[in-house]
Amino acid sequence: MANDKSGMQLVVNGILSENPIFRLALSMCPAVGISTTVMNGLMLGIAVLFVQVFSSVTISIFKNVIHPRIRIPTYTLTIATWVTVIDLVLAALLPDAYAKMGIFVKLIVAFAIITMRLEMFACKESVKDSFWDGMGMGLGFMVGMVVIGFVRELLGSGAILGYDVLGFKPLLFFILPCAGFFVVGLMMAFFNWIELYYKQSKGLK
Image 1 (tube, rainbow, N blue to C red):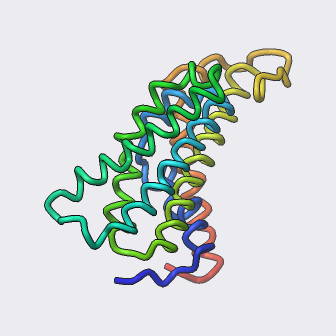
Image 2 (image 1 turned 120 degrees about the vertical axis):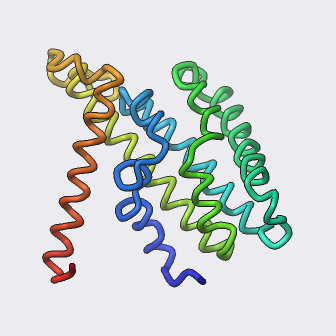
């Protein structure tokens, strides 16, 4: 079935309606493992955005020549190619940030959200629509990582982007990995509440 959404609708869909972290609960490993600061979340979010967009466009371009039996290995090789590109770029341009999150950049190859969008959307739709879908999903992941990082950095260390804003450390618990699940759960509840409120305001069921 052909896509009937505009580019902006696809972007909004990825950020809100089908947010990879808060709505689909995919790729949770980085969401709880590295999202201890805003910068970490932003950097990994940018890397995922790059890989998602370019992988979606690549698969959409070659979708008619990919044999159904080897589509998953093809997706993996495509994702691995673009992960290698962004991995080398980050290592060269931002060595300090890369040193903190290098292993997670390499793990993007195994992120379920990217493979899912290639299978569900890019292999069936046009290059243009696949670009906007990849953009929406990538931005949705990045927004999720930044929000989680913001909450955990502020409440765990009393700082934002490394700058002390509270003068003390409120709850060191938020720096721990288990706090990532806690924050994700709260944000999931918040997104569900927004959707419920929107449907009620529109008289939808």
